[in-house]
Length: 128
Image 1 (cartoon, helix red, strand yellow):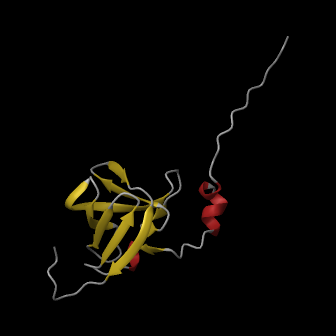
Image 2 (tube, helix red, strand yellow):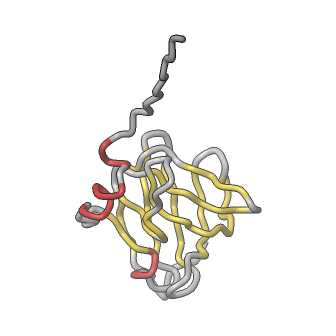
Image 3 (tube, one colour):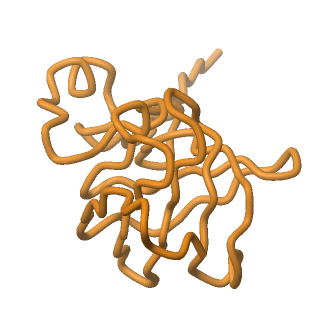
């Protein structure tokens, strides 16, 4: 009787392993928790530009405009930064990672972030 064992291997990028995430410096991004109300992030991804407005200190609830899913400011929860796998850097935006937004019980995932700029709130400026 011939017994053949078939082993399937799945290629996983080294950056998607738990040890890589644990040792990543996380210095190339912004945590939403660091923002004050009405602070804005201008985030350029491979395919779009997003404007993210903090609405409440310490909250992942933001307003976002940009890309094909958000033609106007839309309230969403910024879930975090990911590489499309099971790891998520909560409530953060990082260069090289996709942003995951949660809206109406579904996830919207951007292309990888290329740059992030922060515009602090100007109390004399128009909000939207």
